[in-house]
Image (tube, rainbow, N blue to C red; front, top):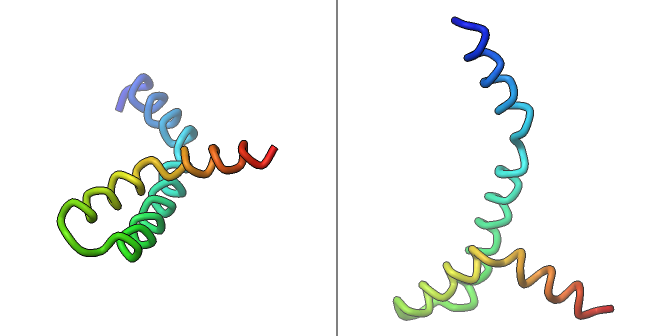
Length: 66
């Protein structure tokens, strides 16, 4: 193994971690929105799209409190 490959691998591990937390939030939002928007295919698609952009909803509502 060369030094260039090992240094690239070390920097990738150092910068990870938040993706797993975001994924858990995505799964939680998906379950919540599927529970409230269950029914037709289009409502399930809306629930999926809302779960993708749920951080934007959170930031909007937090900023609206000011």
